[in-house]
Length: 446
Image: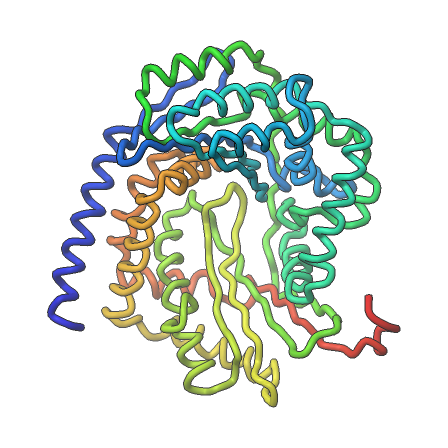
């Protein structure tokens, strides 16, 4: 380490501390009469603002036979209301120099607009309108359903790697709805009808099932009055039923094989792990960083550089979810090397981290990377709002963000050793394998 590195680290940590203090002091939280939560954070560095609205609905709220509803509903939210016709929402945003989009996950669906700060009223008018006045036109539904089906073909059915991951999740979770793909099963998409989407919208797109997050250049008191004007008149409704499914205990390794036309085999495997509600999340995050994050990680260094077994090797862990999570890894063997060799080498690295404490340098580097990532995130008003929205929607609350860096710093080498031995065990593991086949072995390309 160079002489400058400790100085840079001290500056980095002091910036994080000041950001934490500022964040905690300035964020304001309100709940409107109809149950809509509003979180506001003033940031006056530039005359811009991001408006985001988060609905507590994702693929985990779906059932077999109706998968893909949350994602398809997201698409239909851009297809017009009684007041603003098809395409008008996006046209208005664009004409006013803004940009907008949406995303659906396992746990939530979120919509956002980024504007110059003097255009914030547009977000309030447009989003309050489509919260309650969406038109789900039958013709537009069929057109958009076809768009989603094509998206599924391109992103999953024709991508053998994505297909392995999808199958692996379906086998990992026997009961919990994380087994369902966000985009939906193709057979379910074929059978969805217009009323499925409309009923899904009316059930979940209600003010007391949503959170508004605004970060940027505004005055809190003035903006809150405007939000109340546009949104408080929308009546609250009965909250949708909670998902109370509990994933049963896993009693042994599970394996799934996918045969698809491909050049090389592929492995994607995961260990059942806890979510944010367990304090082990901090040690697991750093363990994942040490093992599989980037080209300096143990997996990449050992399997790609030193042993030359793999073309790539990595992994990840994100415990920021409502339900149970996976501590996962993946890899593609080099031509001439077998998947068995690669898988064996990966498990050897895992066993090593379970027996030998990680080095001081590895642990500090992992902490530095997490803290640096936090700083970079705080530099973007969009990412700040996205962090807040996600934490609020999954149930962790925005204060989780304030405490995150502090708890990361407190993780010890003993903590890393403990969680490695607790969670990285064979009986908690599910393995997905891509078996390459030639097109004629499957009766032609699918």
